[in-house]
Structure formats: C-alpha cells, structure tokens
Image (tube, rainbow, N blue to C red):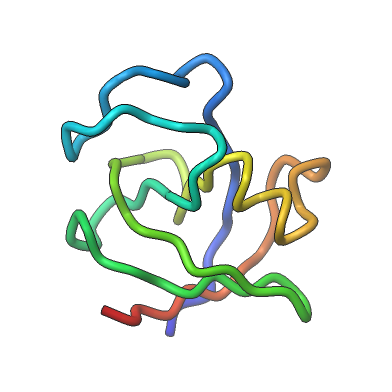
Length: 90
C-alpha cells in the first residue's frame, strides 16, 4: 500500500490514445500511474470512500492521475488534488 497525491485529468484527453493504446474515456474507472504495470487493478482510497481503477496510462506530475469518473466517486474532483492510498489488487 502506498500513500500518495492524486489528481484527476481527462476532459481535454477524452478520445485520445493512452499509453496502453486504448482510447481515454472520462466515464471509465481508469487511472495513470508512473510505474505500475499497464492493465493492473488498484484500489484507491480517499477518506472513507474507495474505488477500483485499472491503470491504462502513464503520468509524471504526481502519484496517480484519476479519470474524472473515479475522482467523482471518491468525492475529490472539486479539490483538484488529494492525499490517497493506493493498493494493488491484480
């Protein structure tokens, strides 16, 4: 488990190719991470809320970049950035 900073990204990237080759969908439960294997699934927790996301892209500016849908579910989209824990599942 890793505690890190999360942000969200996506509106201007919707429909563009991710590092995995798939098209980015702002409604999907996905995320970008600098080192976790593409295709891996992680649990991201912010406070009492958690989501499972699939890593399909790369990032460099913070620990994990969430899709808008994942950030909404965690209740952190309005914050822009938040402290989260990331736990690999598969």
